[in-house]
Length: 153
Image 1 (cartoon, rainbow, N blue to C red):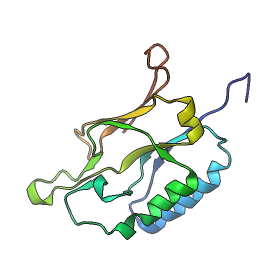
Image 2 (cartoon, rainbow, N blue to C red):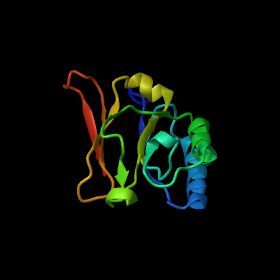
Image 3 (cartoon, helix red, strand yellow):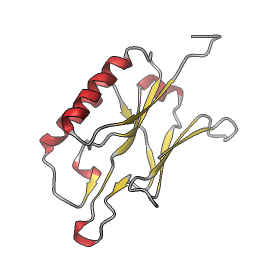
């Protein structure tokens, strides 16, 4: 703590689409987390789902397939930030029966960070040119005077 202000970490991730590489990345996050202290938020493209409700269309995933991601969420002590706007953050840009959309982009925070920023949320702005939506992390005072925003695509 410098000058009475507690440090905060904002970590951006892009996780691999390959499960084995993603699991290795989770291990690196676990190691790095030791340096962050109690106040941190992690956001970006996780390339994984925590439950069936995070997918619309395509093949149905088994409940077991969510176990690895949910385990890392628990081990890291991560709490998902409230998402505003359109639910799904990624789409395959196909039409009709081939259309799939998922919640691949998410923001998680430590309990301490959430306690310091109780009004924090993530806005999902509809996709345009990209297959991913723009995420906007909003935190700070709700009066708007001290509100902070971070844009991620």
